[in-house]
Amino acid sequence: EKGNHKHFMAKEMHEQPSVMAYALNNYTTPDGLKVEISGVDLDFTRYDRVTMVACGTAYLAAHVAKYWFEQVARLPVEIEVASEFRYREPPIAPRTLAVFISQSGETADTLAALRYCRDKAETILSIINVPTSTIARESDHALPIFAGVEIGVASTKAFTCQLTVLAAVTLLAARQRGEIDSDREAELLAQLGTVPGAMVDALALEPQISSICWDLSKASDILFLGRGAMYPLALEGALKLKEISYIHAEGYASGELKHGPIALIDETVPVVVMAPTDALFEKSVSNMQEVMARGGKVLLISDAEGLASASDGIWKSLRMPKVDPFVAPILYALPAQLLAYHTATTKGTDVDQPRNLAKSVTVE
Ligand code: M6R
Image (cartoon, rainbow, N blue to C red):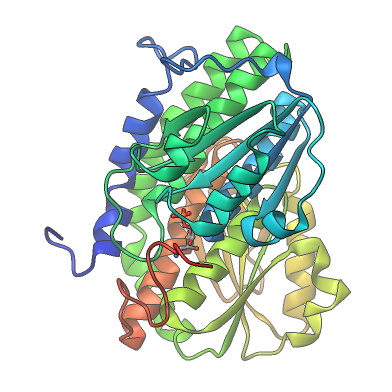
């Protein structure tokens, strides 16, 4: 069932170009110009705010979606990890859309958070991979992510498919709220349509990534930095690495570096900077220079343009295909996953069944 792959995680990473394209297809009109969610009647003029609740990688998908919803649909979004949300019992304002994201649809804390919102939120929407799951059944609307069965404990294709569905929902919300016109919607959908091909190119970086990972596997701490919607990707890169390689890793918003974490930097700490060229690129570069000035070893993940302007003094680089900044978080998930995977396999850890972890956390 793993095909030619050594692990389910590898197989699932490599499935991403096709499952992402399939997921996108399921949320667009046949001509690909408009978002269409068949059978679900979502009306974003009914909401003033969105609350998104999830755990782990699904929470990080919500974190990316916060940037999208706020920037593109101009709808304020609160995000929270389910284990905190459920016991904090926050007041839920009228006209709130509550969104629960879960691959399994069975995560205990996420389900409890959903039940808390039941008679409080205007609408309960879930984004799930398992359509028959409890979370799907208890929602007003459940949107499948079409990732197919995910077996590896480290979530990979579910994350990129969650992001794909969230991006489509963002465009629907933006159109319904009059924030984008149909040309812009078609243009952003076309940008999403470029991602599967770009994913194939990103996967082709694997030999290069695996050679970098020999060095990473010797580190005891690794930092990941990102800005804007790349900040949650930095968190995801660190989470993946911790989960399967057991190396301590932290993700930070690049601008937070000088508020503490920069004290950790020396020549033994690799720093992975996720920085596609976008409006914040120059700011990421200056944070990267602060790291290098303290002897930090920078691995810069960017596109050709970014690498051409900022490679001086860096330790290693990965040249990603250039995509629109809107879709970059989906694409940059792949190098984050591949770094974790190859570091783990270099160390010889059990990638599909990492110690202490379960695929679905159905108890608190
Ligand atoms: O099934 P869920 O999406 O609700 O699971 C949430 C987390 O347990 C899950 O994403 C976990 O963080 C993964 N192992 C991350 O790779």
